[in-house]
Length: 419
Image (tube, rainbow, N blue to C red; front, top):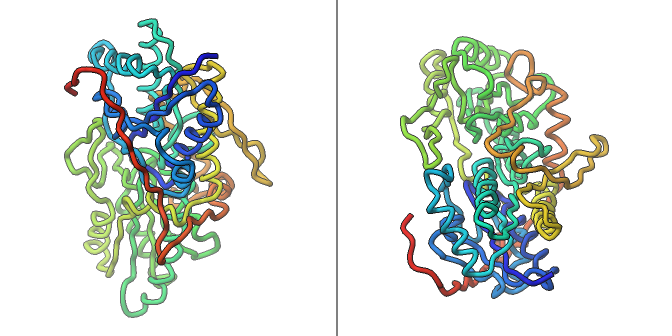
């Protein structure tokens, strides 16, 4: 097999372990140097390919690449930039192929969520139409855990561990102060349409009265009177109430509680803080003193508390992506298959991108308690293995060490391109 180059890019919101997938891709490419020459990374995701802004990853040391495994963020830069349909934006897709041709790139690894899976599929389809031999593989990533087919999405397990831990720790704080101070604590977590992260907060407790006392999911319509009643009951019974609420909590008509009235680059509604909105309702309706927090970037950047299971799976899907490409399996995505529940065992499989792109996986109703405010034992059995194990980064001077890359740019060969 002749030697050709590979392209890797990161897309969308980053996670604590997306760089572990990058590490898996790059180290596996290096192990197959007889077939894969250089690895180029797109600076700021797919934009790097369109503008021919490429990083020569072959210039990075093995030590620096290995350090990606314990470095949060997106090492090469990510972006929220969705390539739309080929008919409307054909020039952009053709530009990608031109850049790949100019740099002898025959392997395309796109590390992202559902929108990235769609882009990866379209790139593979166009390369076929244009007669350019490109093997496109989607590397799964999303904290929202909403990719279909795969048992779970790399990035989710670490967010789940962070949210469950933070919920437990904050609950102890509130419990110690509630007699004379704060009665209600509201933690807002990510999850626009799927309540997986909110559900993970429920792992913080399990017995009677153990917080969180309410979990509010986007899958079920928000009913203010019912929620206020449950908050009041918890405060009167336990002295305090802890709530984990998904940013995507919405009313019966589909309106988000925290709709800020704007949209992001992918056309998704911009959400403006459901925690203060809900806390305001509690103050207005019940008069209780409250505190609220928005986990925001902290939840997806918390590599210091990553799940070892998640780190291992993130690396494994990166490794499998390269193996699939070398087998010539185009337009595929590595998936995680749960082999056994007890003990928890998993393996890496693969699924065609046509079955993944533009599909979302929601919380099954049987994972949500009948009253809608917590998780069932089935939900707990699903979630619990994903937060198991610790994989602490090395520390130096009291702080976690992170990868330091040279990011040597590849000389451009083509005219400039306007996005």
